[in-house]
Figure (cartoon, rainbow, N blue to C red):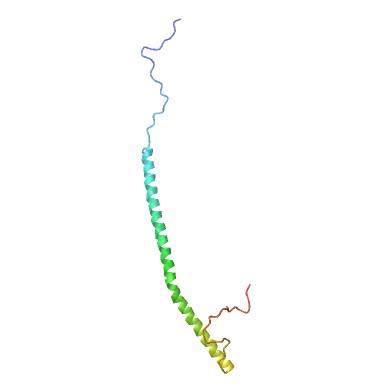
Length: 119
């Protein structure tokens, strides 16, 4: 019996790949779009951080400029209390007494605490 031979010109190529069309854009376009979006986001974050730093600096300087006003208010309150204490002492003792050797005002170095401590 004679052997089978391939046809003249060969067999047709065997289709082993699936012929599915590519969906969507090329991956390079997706990568470029994500890069642009991330760049925009980083720019916005950087501007936000700069704005927060500027607000914090403004807050710090406003507090620094308020310190003399607050100190003057506290000093006036201390002098008012000191004069009220001297008036009360004069009413109770009948004369002005001084525990200091001079009339110079000395800032009190004690804190008034409540008698009954809550736990």
